[in-house]
Length: 158
Image 1: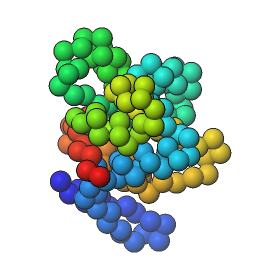
Image 2: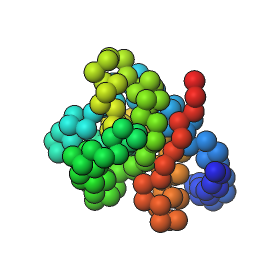
Image 3: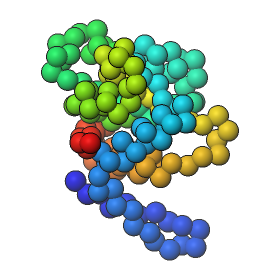
Image 4: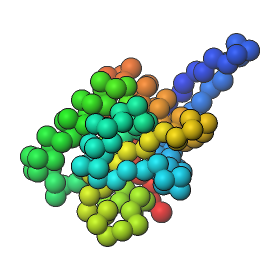
């Protein structure tokens, strides 16, 4: 899937940004956030941050696999998280390979089992920009224009 988005600069020139691989951008954004300690892994941990400091949340990833498709409690949490993201203008995507997401973000065994929700928070000083995350925000914005409110992204293999 390739989306072309036009960005208008200060000098009124048109620049085209191509989001050719949202999966690659997602991986890069997750790794960048992890290296800067701006990653929250886990449904309950994410819900706590969303409740305590919603303005700090920049991006949300929900992961579902076949094993948990029938988990009603998890489905309810996902519905509440999605609603929160919509209400607070937070970009949100789904991934279907929870194991791959866990491999990217997890460094502890307990995190691997609770990688159903991953949040990327803003830096404390607000001075940083992540090009991969910006591409993801543009991808989500374009998806919403096409009425795809929680687009699914495939994560790249190693």
